Image 1 (cartoon, one colour):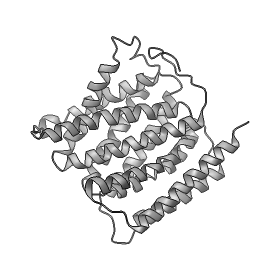
Image 2 (tube, helix red, strand yellow; image 1 turned 120 degrees about the horizontal axis):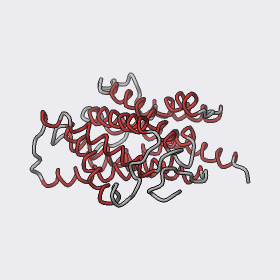
Image 3 (cartoon, helix red, strand yellow; image 1 turned 120 degrees about the vertical axis):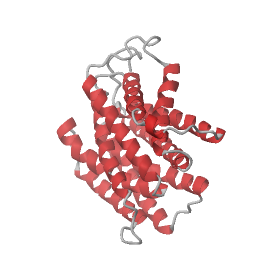
Image 4 (cartoon, one colour; image 1 turned 90 degrees about the vertical axis):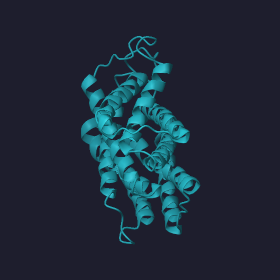
Amino acid sequence: MRAPGDSKVTPAPAPLVGIALMCLAVMSFAVTDTTAKWLSAHINVLIVVWARYVIHFALSLVVFNPWTVPGLMRTKRPGLQIIRSALLFATTALNFTALQFLQLDQTVSIMFSIPFFVALFAGPLLGERVGLERWLAIIVGFAGILLVVRPGAGGIHPAAILSLVAAATYALYSITTRMLARTDASKTTLFYTALVGSVVASIPLPFVWETPRDPAVIGVMVGLGAVAGAGHFVLILAHARAPAATLAPYIYTQILSMIALGWLVFGQVPSLWTLAGAAIVIASGAYLLVRDAQMRPH
């Protein structure tokens, strides 16, 4: 990868490194969702979304900014940078709203429909081919998701629709991330993500603002922005090293973190159905890892 000030990223293809970075990114997203769910019980969800972006932006400026990193704001595709950032903002707002009504394992299970959207969009937008083996592995993984959600066994809150729409917007966000990785530096993309999100999130703030007084709430708000920012930077690095269709199934690993955090923070003990579904999802991801390794030239 070139220096941060350069406008183009040209890392050598490294699928295994990309997959490892993807797993690390989605783990941070599990922490982000957990803190957002906790915060939404103490403060307006729009303030939670604002904190996620503004604190992320403020902290990132300490590490790199247009003054210390020449060319940081230089992008060959400014329109796509704005669209990508807006897609992530929409995903965040929809998901944080849904988290007020759904359990962590429910939201992550619905968001696991992302690979279907990625596979659908990657063809026309990136020219990537999704082979039969990947389709089968994704379908098996989705069967595991159905075990977790068990539609018809008590039903799911209507907020689940928000999570489904968030999955679609996130898939488009992933595709645009991959497209920008070809022309713009990772730090440039991360900078625009935080900048655009902060501006949009600040628009409704005067109408919903309430000053947090609990030091714990303030501390978690700061942590939310920091973890979210780090996670998306790692995600950008992952997409610079492996195709979107290769990375998409590994979002399934997030279910482990969500189950653990749901139990630790909210006392939500997963059922046997949830554990069985998680095992199937993990198995499909492991198959893809082995398959990708076998397909690479030696």
